[in-house]
Image (cartoon, rainbow, N blue to C red):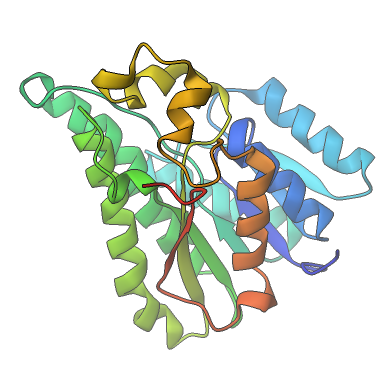
Length: 255
């Protein structure tokens, strides 16, 4: 505990799901946390309240990470509120399934504006304020390396994230800033529940979900959001001081 004492962290998309658990975990480790949300103000305030009830400090700031001006305002407001920024966790993302012939330019813009451009400009805005020892953590996905039917657009956006951290590492390393990505596998969130059937191979759709996951993950289960949050907390802590440019799979040994 308290590995992140005196640190200030922003977690984008942290009003629910994995982002919520990341915000709670970083607070448990001593960080002051900015809970970012796009539209779920009530849920964001609930996360802030939970952190405060546990003795931590947090504030909620609205921003749509597909809009560059709002990203810049998010970071500026965070620094104004807490006086510094040490950790940026880019968790926001949107899902997409669609056959090749059905993908539209609007689909591409929606997915890449959040999953790629949003994460790039979140890193850019954060880097302007991070000191030596600062940390940036972006979100990729196991989908970047494991083929799934009709998942091309989403997978391509997440592969781009891994390419970004790999190439930003030496540039930011000159300033003493580490940048990495996490690539979660199947995780028990509301988004996963909504799309679980779409991740299933057509030949396995008649099988129970628990049976299907046993054919996909070595640990034979989905991750809990808290497990992903624990990996994030490690990557932004001093325990990971010699890791940069990497995409760490937290996927239960998916195959």
